[in-house]
Image 1 (spheres, one colour):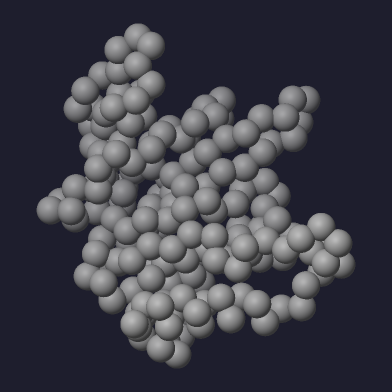
Image 2: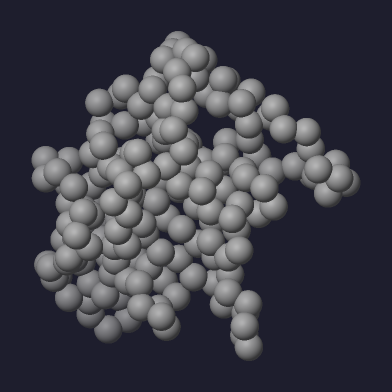
Length: 178
């Protein structure tokens, strides 16, 4: 029941801002866009809208009236948070996406690991300038703190604190899922 009460409080917190004229005319964004529970069940991470097309990643203890901590704040120009999942009780991995508008319009994604106090951000997976897809986590390796398995040019084990990776299984031609 505490988690349900907390989600209700999160929605109420997000709903406090008056809707903009565009929201009134065209529809408002969701109050909570993604929620995940920490491995120990004591904290929630959730994504709420920010000004314009922005998003905020917030962490809150799974207790009624607990204070919130903003972990990430993205302005939507071009990056936004799509989802955040727990690497450990103290670290998140967030899927960030955006649309770059230059000579061509191109979508991209990146995976950003960050401590729940907003410190020690680290890009993980694919992150080169001409890389559109940042990869995806396929196993959270719950028995190996701060490490994940990702599909990113094959299967790689990634240290989310340093960004260093080691190849586990190379990708075969035309393979796009593991």
